[in-house]
Image (tube, rainbow, N blue to C red; front, top):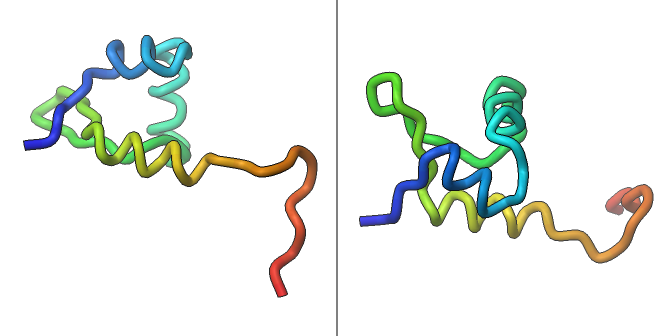
Length: 66
């Protein structure tokens, strides 16, 4: 079974406030999350996939794909 992280645990790992994670969930821009009753949890594999998708090779505007 994949490790499940609480929002507080993930916030510590990302060096972000837990409130940022709440905003990301609201906006749909953060890692996927699981609701278990009223509890929010993040699968470690979903966080890794989200981080991979955030990886950049340059700053500035991205080039349009052909």
